[in-house]
Image 1 (cartoon, rainbow, N blue to C red):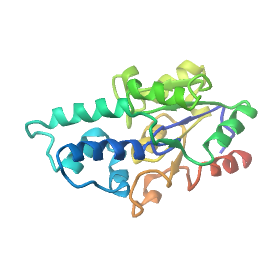
Image 2 (image 1 turned 45 degrees about the vertical axis):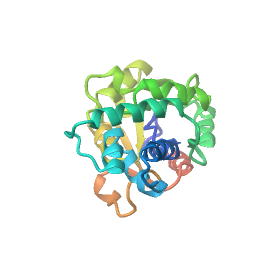
Image 3 (image 1 turned 135 degrees about the horizontal axis):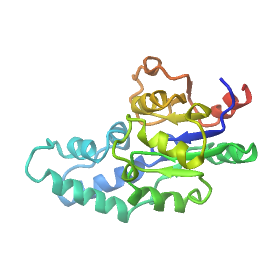
Image 4 (image 1 turned 30 degrees about the vertical axis):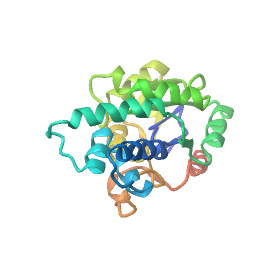
Length: 220
């Protein structure tokens, strides 16, 4: 595995632990309805599947039920209000990014999180101006696992996709990276259930902590 020209990351569950903010907002909504709160651990397993999955889980609603979209819109509006209330970068992420920059390796973010949320989060953590590229689903026709967003990121950085690594905590990240001919790195510290069979993803490497990516870079 050769040293990359650039490393691209998923956001939630890879660089950012955003589950505490989602948990806070879900419990705000439950409290309004005088329903009991749910645990952070319970909501973590839903984060990677998006707002619809979290709403469906927390309120026991099917997506085709009357009122579902109203719940989803309320959830997203509250989430925007409470962005960065409790979210944090995973331990080691700041050091990892510093190491990439020190070694003149470009880095960027390719996420399925809408730009409405992504931009202010990255501003808050002082990452927006440092990233070589930031691609959200707003910028493409097809979100991951389609590789379109990864190809767009490479185009904006003027690099070939095979010179790039993609790091993510979900099978769709590995599928997208592989489809774009990138080296793929799966993260076990994200939001999937501990029983997840990461080995079946087909990633080129698996890491249990952000700083293990530095070890991979040093071996190449």
